[in-house]
Amino acid sequence: MRMGLREANQRFSKAVKAVKAGEEVVLTDRGKPIAVIKPLPRASTGDTAMRHLEAAGLLRRASKTTPLPRWTPRPIKGRPLSRTIREERDAT
Image (cartoon, rainbow, N blue to C red):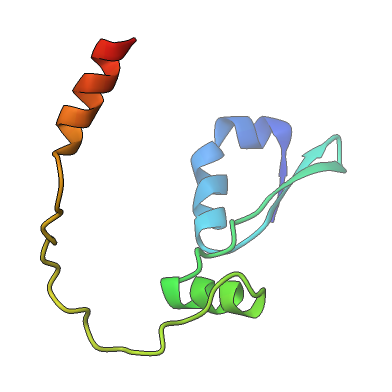
């Protein structure tokens, strides 16, 4: 679709509707094309993005598809960390 600048200014919603429908709109100034309004490429799905990262070598898929076991904290032997930090702050 071609639109002059004046028409695009007056009927911008028409140009936007055309772009939403997947059409490119060429803006003209005295009959000469000066700009193109076109739809953005559709956002890739998570799976597509994962495949691209995997192909680029930035990602390695998990070998197991089962959920991880429930996390439980481990008890730590020794003094509490808060006590050690407090002592170091007092020493300076």
